[in-house]
Image 1 (tube, each protein chain N blue to C red):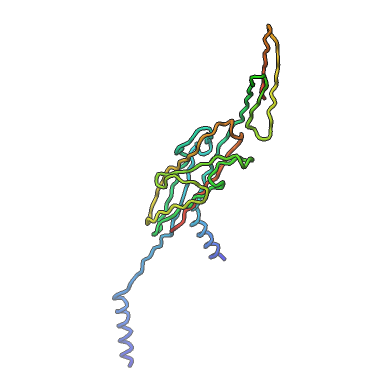
Image 2: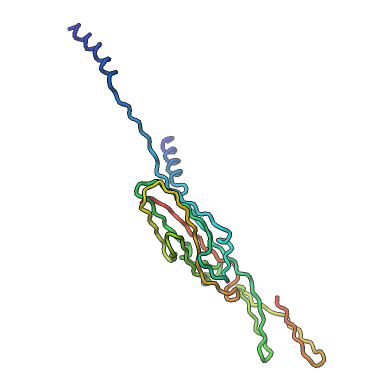
Length: 153
Length: 73
């Protein structure tokens, strides 16, 4: 009996060293990033001059998700440049990019890119509106804030 | 507690950069103008908020010609 136990003890370490496995694993987190870089025109819009694809920003989007990403664009004033104190004094505008085309922001707009990452895309953002002579507009500041949000599909 | 804090930090860093805003701004300057009608009346125009412009009018006669000088604020 003692001989058998000794034999097993001797044999076991030899077998354990003969084969084994090592699991190597790395995890890449989901990356979803959007950055809007405005041009000078974005904050100096000449309301008396019609704009057709006036260059107001570059929009850079990055993602590495498998199913792609979507971007939701919302306007605080529903697609209008609004006077700071006279809410009825507004200028309607639309935006455009080369891939999305022209779109209004009366309601949030969603653009989907069902393309697996990694992706890193920059697009120029343009603004369109019809100019109005200054003497037909209430003097003062007209603003709107457009928010871009990226998420995974 | 440390694990929860670390988890929150990781969550926030993952969310960072998922949203970005663009501010659009325009400024309309103050405009004044005075229009003289054929019968000699004056019509003033302004695009200012809640403020009616009051031009200063000065009339002088020279060699039988009446000169009207309008100075707008």
